[in-house]
Image (tube, rainbow, N blue to C red; front, top):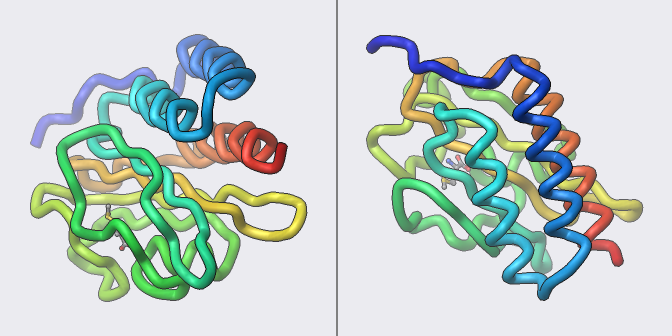
Length: 161
Ligand code: SME
């Protein structure tokens, strides 16, 4: 597959997205804010094919907002299961470069080739996470990790208000 053009490593577009996110979380109801956020995150790279925000509800993750290639059957994920559940349990970002080679991966879309899951860490633990699927193999770099961890910090401040 030919590599897609991407603005991933350019600071300009991503700083604009972070500014827009800060504005988005400054007002509006929770559901609307998170929906707006996934749409803004999607602008971070044309490799981001599906973006979801899950929130911790008891011992599970619950899908609160998504944008991209369609609905997932995984709207509730027990903490500890799949890449999502593991990232929440360990409170660490997980990048899977080839989902077909990772037995922990829970499949949502047959076209997905790689995935990143970034926990949203609050003062008292993990509040939720950002989950992104890409149809491109090894789509996620350290730049994506840094960008999305900044996004997660903005979301954490909002969710803890
Ligand atoms: N792939 C995830 C499940 C969520 S879907 O990708 C939307 C996982 O392995 O936990």
